[in-house]
Length: 332
Ligand SMILES: Cc1cc2nc3c(=O)[nH]c(=O)nc-3n(C[C@H](O)[C@H](O)[C@H](O)COP(=O)(O)O)c2cc1C
Image 1 (cartoon, rainbow, N blue to C red):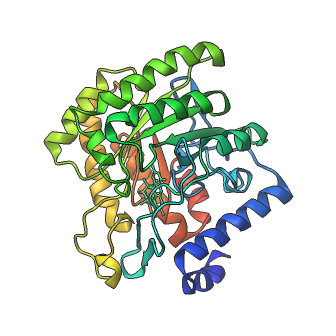
Image 2 (cartoon, protein in one colour):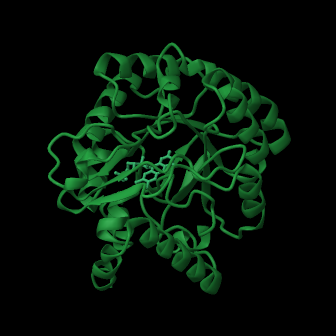
Image 3 (cartoon, rainbow, N blue to C red):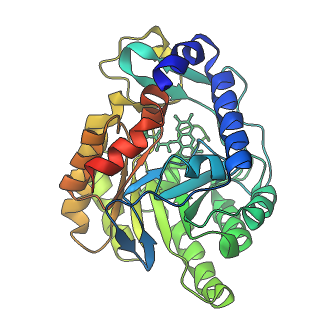
């Protein structure tokens, strides 16, 4: 079915195709309602029971407008966001590019989103019973010195309407955001969020897991240092990786565009980061692997390398919704 729709979608502007897809999934969800996750390989992280290992990566449904529609693809969890305290429009268009020859995307959206209050309202109403994570970030005009305040605002507002939080310090499209992911800075954001989480656990009546999403562009030594720093905190998991600034081996003319690269060109790097994370963290923290998962075999390989869960984004654009059930099948 997707093979019939894909050529038409790939002929139109990528952001328009993205909006059309979200609107179609939103309409599908409104007509049919949500569905429960497909049965697959079950796992548990910090008390959360995942029915299968495959999740939707952040950034596709930033504002949580199509949760029911996405749930119908079979995902074991859905991560919405990145959301910031105040709404913002993101970078000027064009800001999304298809690198067809490379099966990749470059985006420089810059956290365009409706803001945390709108998301909270939507999550309060949604009927989906599966696991929902909210990926949180800082507004573009918030300085890095005050960034922790934005993250704390987001967690405080959204804690009662989601199942886990992801601290995103890894988008390349918010100036200097990735500086916050360095080993000597990361606790400046993570520690206040974890403090806020302690207060919120009482309000929620149960524990709220917090994950941290990292970039793929550290050298090995720096990545190990960040992971060592996180290991000493009460964080519940690490999501590796966000998009890359690297441009190695690309053929498409769009390779000169600035922004984060995702899809097939990221596969090797994401697997490399996963190996380092598993070696460094041993069994202290689970790793959620994302980046260049383009097939069921790719997903299976991530679990074999030691990941607990796998997320997909760009693979959905190239392979279509069938990728989700293929990956669930391969990882049973
Ligand atoms: C268009 C686009 C927008 C994205 N927006 C976000 C975002 O808002 N927050 C985030 O944490 N990751 C975002 N990502 C990164 C993805 O969640 C994922 O980490 C990355 O694309 C690698 O996975 P993939 O190769 O399966 O796409 C975005 C990716 C794309 C392609």
